[in-house]
Length: 172
Image (cartoon, rainbow, N blue to C red; front, side, top):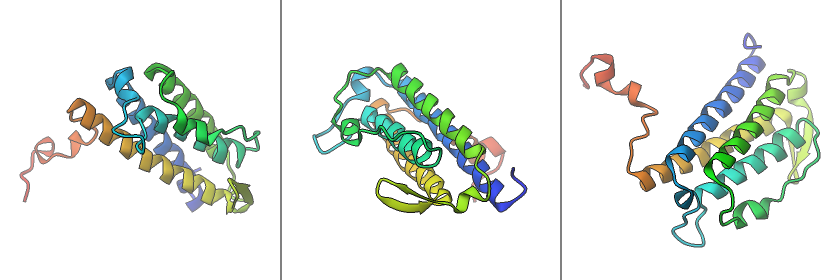
């Protein structure tokens, strides 16, 4: 799959979604239920809302828009939730949704990437839909990581391997 530009794109998108989902699952494991649903104000989203939102977005854009499953998304409910779902439940829902989407992405053909689909009122190519989901997922993963750092005061260690000391080099 990765010997063509199309194959490289699909491999990257699938791998990035898996990587980012694993970081969100790690963050959920570091947070209490109260922290997962904490909001600084009503115009902010809790980590829990962002996870529900990512599941809804991936389901709508990849599973429905690309794979043709029914669109059952209730976007407003993703943001209206104020609890009721635990960290392990959110993690399981995210992992399941991403695994299903990664399967769709990995099985997408080069020809299919050029097909037009209508998702959330937008007319996009399948390539654009996959690119949108990858980019959107990355943005919200960054928010979840930032919130986790604020709530726990921890260095999550995702880039520890890049520190100069890890390479035995001095920083210039």
